[in-house]
Image (cartoon, rainbow, N blue to C red; front, side, top):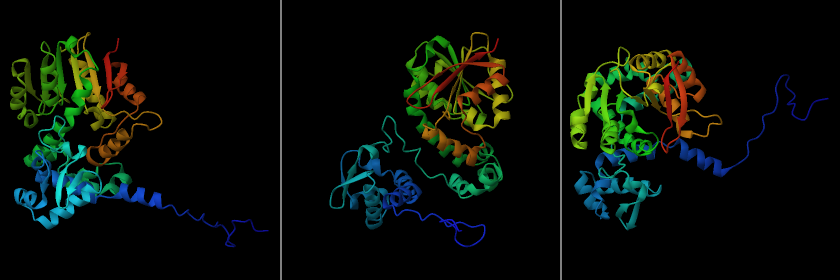
Length: 351
C-alpha cells in the first residue's frame, strides 16, 4: 500500500508545497537588493549629504552643484527616501535624515569615505562561487594577485581603501578608549596600523602614552599628516616594515586591530610569533577584531567572515580558535573585553 507521500514513482517523494508568504518575499527582496547600496555609494561620491548640511535644497540646486541632471538625481534621491536615507521635505526638495547625516564628511563618525565604490571588490564578489568551490579568495582569482599586492601596485585603489579603513576606525576608536588601561602600557605598537588614525586617537586621548606605527612602507607614507593633525607627532615613531619579518621590540602593548582575521591559520600564527618575539615579560598583546561567538549572535562577525573568504583569505574565529592560535605562537589568552564595536582579546607571553 502506497504511503500518503508516495507519488507512485519508485524512489521519489512528493515535495512539500511551500507556503505563500508575501512578507518573506519582501524580506528576501530587501536582502537581495543591490540597487540601493550602489545608489548610496554613488550619492556619497557626489557629496550630496555635504550639500544638504545647512538645510534642505531643491533637486535643481543639488543637481547644479553636484554636476548631475535634476531628473535622474530626483529618481535616485526618491529611491533612497523610500528607505529612510533622505527626506523629501517638500515636493522635489530634499533634506537629511539621521541616517544621511553620517554621510557628511564633517560628521564625527563620518562614513562618507567608507561608502564609496570599490570596483575591485565588486569584481571579486561576482566570482563568489569560485571561493565557495575552492575555499580561495575570489579577489586573487579575478585580479591575479593578493589584495595587499594589488593595492601596492594600484595607488589610487590603495588610497580609496585607506580612506575607507580610516572612516571605519573612528567608531572603533570611540568604542575602545575606555575598554583598556591604554596609558598603563607606556608605549603601544600598532601593528599593521595603516595611516595611524587609530593610534593618533589613542595618543590624543592619553597624553603620556607613546606610540609606534608599524606597517608597510607605502602604507605608513601617509601617516605624517595624520599624526601632525592630531598633535601627537612628537610622541609617535613611524616604522616601515613587514610584520612577517620582525616587529619593533620592547613595548608595553602590541595592538593588532582587524589584522589577525585577515590571514589563514599559518599566517596568523607566524604573525603572532613575530609579536611574541618582540614582547618583554610585562608586554600585552591586544587583538581587536570580530569574534564568531557560539550561537551566531554577532551578525557582523558572520558577514565579515564571508568578506574575508572572498577578498582576503582570512576568517573570523571563535574565542577557542583564537586561543589555540595564541598557544601555537607561545602566547596565553588572558581575557576578552567586549566593546560597542569589536571585542579586544588580550594576551601575554606564555610562561
